Image (cartoon, rainbow, N blue to C red; front, side):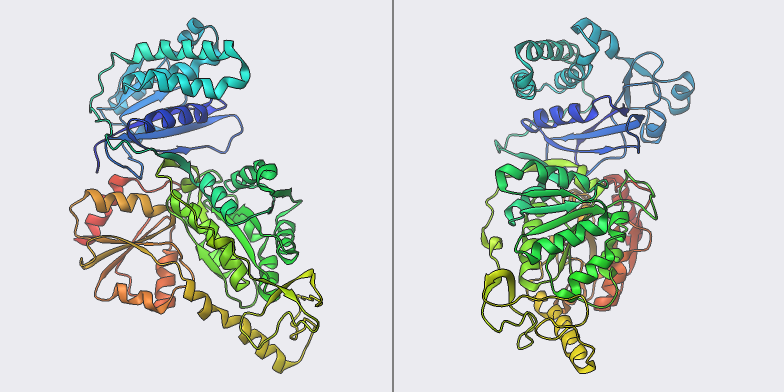
Length: 561
């Protein structure tokens, strides 16, 4: 595990934790390596939320379980984090934020930090968050100028007085934090690189724009709603039409209709919302209509834990819909892949005329990390529609992937139907036509595997021990490989379905360990079903939390014994 500091801010919804997080991550990124995520209760106000910021002198990609510095912002913000403190944890807060019983039970004391009084000193309780930002900046010797610049940018629309008052509040906090001696000094980075701070939501939005998205229809459901918000905010700049549909099935039907009319559309939802869309998924399947569907996973069944994380919906998207038809499932695990895979999703959907799923989860979507800027290719803006001619047959079966025309573009008549149909799109009950048309659709599977997105390999490829992860487990496994002396290699799967037979060679002679945030090992089961891979060990977690770096190292050591 890399040398780092884990700073957790704990308060209730409405106390501005997200604002502090954004300020701190931007400031820290200028001088350190940083990774941050959040834990949110299912409350509009109240409850107890937390933000964890991990600061290090070398790149970090995951959370630590043990907390070094814990800032309590109210008198009920400790209980859910109690198991994560030890006798070395420094707990900051006002008198009463930590009870005598809690102090005794967990062996911690309270370091006085009266944020309310300091905010009054600065002129208003509104400045509490800015003071806290300044205090942590002072603790870690961050550039004062960068802090001032961030405040100026954030409040420039509010006028000079608001800017100056917040700078004054920041300086009060900074002066108080400066004398604090950090127990584990973290060296500032010296690489002089310019990093972009990126979370999963933003990376998917950028990737969708790079893929040519111009339509999104969705019914709000966390944690997928942020993509709807992001793309709707880009409407004028990028020509994206956003529609908040009346329900989930309408949203996907609208998206399918947008593709039929020549747009590039996406729908975003979570598992419960997607469950209501499955009839429309089958519509895309039989009409051979493209669709891009983002499913942001959270723990089920039913409402489950609506603001926590899990990788429990892989089976849902792989098998959703009545009948048999091909589909593609992509699962990003780092910001770069959020951009690249979202961009490619539109190209793949357009090229193969199939539904393409982007499968993320709450943890990955809401975590922020550093990313080096990179150039995007315009390859994936390529469109595969044709100008129709007289006699056009939408489902011409002379080729597995029939030319897709757009109504009004050309002289041909573009007819599609949700019933079984012949080449022209006319309804049929002819058994022979049914078999031929069904086999034509299913044959796409082998073709689309020609564009299979290959996995990424880290560590010693010659190791007999192979750890496999997909999606959001990428970061914690990457850090494990880079920092431990365990004899393991890591295969990061970006496309968990479908899988090509050529992938099987990477498993031959290996002790295969699959790590997933679900209870049954859904991807491990797909490896067995699709490729007949023998899975030697499964490391599973399904309590609503992501994997922490310490626990992954411990669990991998256990299975290697």
